[in-house]
Image (cartoon, rainbow, N blue to C red; front, side):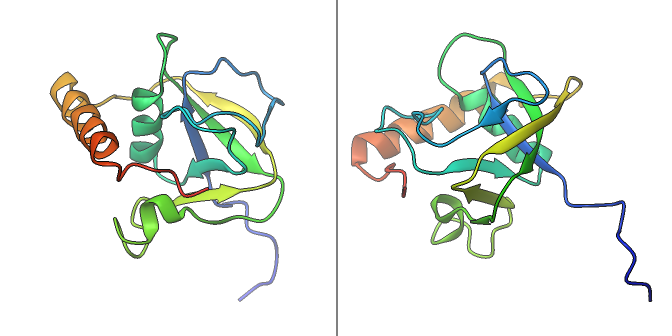
Length: 138
């Protein structure tokens, strides 16, 4: 076994409707893409395209859905919004950081979920909000 650097580093994605450019930083201090909240003290991202696609599809607003390849600039931790009780073990490979994410590329070819799947997910999120169980753990 070699201790040489591995060219196959972990890949991270961020799904959103924000129009970003390579080199831009996604930083703390902005509202969630999904809920009317106070500005968040974490930035959120994932290692799976499916979770990033959900992030893009569920983001508020009418702008085009986008997925960016991002690079954390600091330490990362599991996202407790998806890993505590909802999906123990972090199968969605969802993370967060207090340090910015650097946009290193945009993923331009990806297949979204069906309109029925998106509607079902949005209905579920609306139900959670109405029940008071959709709070973001920030």
